[in-house]
Length: 298
Image (cartoon, rainbow, N blue to C red; front, top):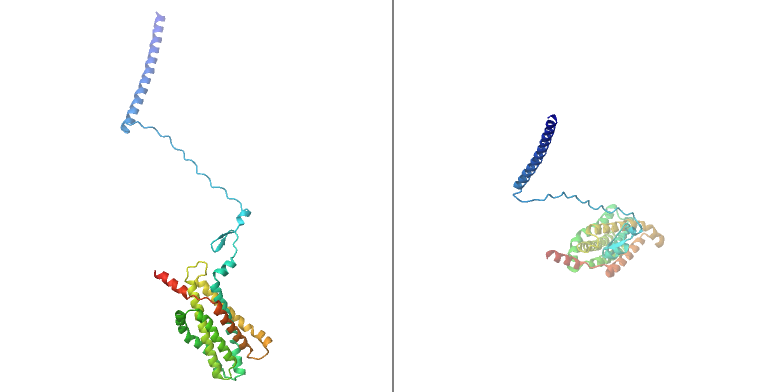
């Protein structure tokens, strides 16, 4: 009897455990089905696939910097200049592309050197040879500047009408005649007229040179210097000539004796040579001004 009771209680316990097991299975099934229904309602009945997150691919690293080798020092010509790790000033290209500007600067250097030779000589000549007073010597020196003041505007009109080159060679020719007249002067009025004539020639040349540089600076040739650099070089050449001229007087006296008129002969020869060189070598730039103005109008 006792044994039968133990067996029945064991079976009851086993059935209870099975019941609990199957109850858990049913609950899991119901929970999973309800979760699927909720997902379907959210997606409108469409089945969606869960996308796996994309893993960003790393960008390629930049190449490591290479060390400088012998090939990096190669010079590569580009246009009117040279690019590379070593920069070399292209002197030949500079001279070729700016030959018109350089020719005018050379003429201005020689012209200013001639005036520099006469500047300290004229007061000594007027006082020792002509025995002029200080007021008369001052008026002689002022005659040169007065002539330039009077002739600058007419010279500009002449340059626009007849061309720039005529002023570049005719101005030094007038200066040559003025220097010779200064050499032969024997009175106050002769010397005054000679210096006024020298101012006329100087004004003609300076106006022609300035207008020529302005014409060249307006062109679209990128190899040429711009207007500011051209004018700076022109002014530098003129100042250099004016500074060197007085220093040559002692050498002239050594070559031509102690005659105080000797510098006038050297200045005459210099201005005459300058006129001849300008006649054959000076550029005519009037066409550059007309072409630039026509392109601006169009």
